[in-house]
Length: 372
Image 1 (cartoon, one colour):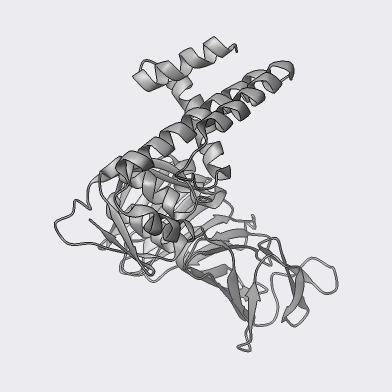
Image 2 (cartoon, helix red, strand yellow; image 1 turned 90 degrees about the vertical axis):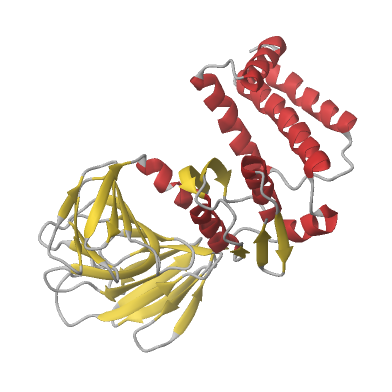
């Protein structure tokens, strides 16, 4: 792709004359850059930025992936200029507020493991072995907790009465666990999962509060059951997301396989197909089709809001950055919001994107943010 072709593409995107594929290409590069960029300073050296961009353009011409380097550099230049121009012309809170928000970093791999005897073990990225139960060791490292037998033999799924472990993530925390049966679970912020170690009996039952993504290991004779305070989900082997925070309706989204869900308040069971989402309202479910990959994008480092009520979007952001949004009843919090935002940005960068999309302003006071 030549310099002129790159410029023409960016011009078409800016005018809105591009194809969906062209728009998606530019947006993908923008999101990738957002994951890497630090906050933009107020006194921007435009000449220096341009020299660096054009140096990258020249490098890109000679490599086998030249078109990609070219696009990345061009979008970087446009993104930096646009972002800086927006801050300089629309900033309503001032540099001190921006610096304070920029200092609030995104969440990371942190959780607490509570063993059956009440002992608590902090979990993070460090390598460490934990005696989780008789004959069972939990190995933590790189944000993942794995269980294995001390005899190095496959864990038996029947036997004595199990003991229980619980993993709890705080606000601004997430963690992964590979359960004793091989099931993979990713916990979102402010969530907890309780499970037996090892699984015994005719079923594999876990208890969840908050949000988690499951990739269930297949054991046809021992179904996997996720229980919340409001519903029960039964599977044998499949991929799905469950969101069951307190004081919110339970939402189950199926990515692969099939699940049967039943409200605890009734005996009505619904079977979901891939791409379907069930929201528990009262004693029954409201089922609709969704893009499952968007719902579970949080585990891969993205907020994806598709026609999402603003209040719900702010709740998700608040959990990940450990901040609380406050607002009065006159604000349009039911207004639908569309955006894809990297979960690796600092809070100031996220707030700038929301301000551009909603025309609202945000004022930081400690860990509280007043929405105006």
